[in-house]
Length: 255
Image (cartoon, rainbow, N blue to C red):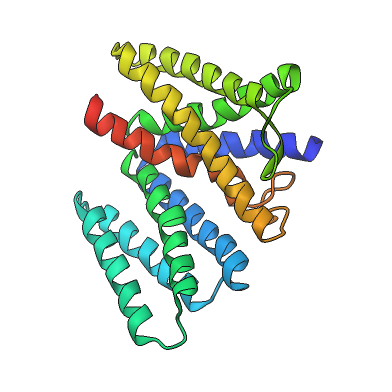
């Protein structure tokens, strides 16, 4: 537990500092996080972080990163189209690539690269902080609510310790924290904010459950050992992956 707390505090300070500084440093750190996440999930699916399926996704991440650095604001949709098209061509012309393999490659590309790229899109804005508030706020509030009030299991086949009471506590806590943050930003569209906060908290918990399901189906405890007491990058950023796109599109379309 001590190791977990120390890692959490040091990691939190590091990510907060990177987010505060922003710019190329922020982009580079999140690019690195993305590549580590690709490696971890490729190890699970392909038994190697250097499998050609992993390499395809490293290239996808590199292309998006370069596009971001060059300031191509509409590059995401085009690069996603190219990525999926090239994977389908790989499926057609490579005899060793079956539907299962190509599905796993694209799953990693969407889950790790596409979802995480939204953190880069919010660089130098106030909204990465909102992602942290929702993801880590939901997790913390759900943990303590579950400890104090939890009686009914949420999804025992995937995560035996999570409870319905904890999930509700996470949603309520996340909504309160989001309202406080939007008040700080002087944004007062409260109905939108409440609906968004509830939805984003559900997304956060779904991200956690999705990671748990992947681990359970593949009989592993953690995705890696990079973060002592926490596991791998994906063990710590599983909720962020789901929340980042939710925040980005809410800001884009509703604020």
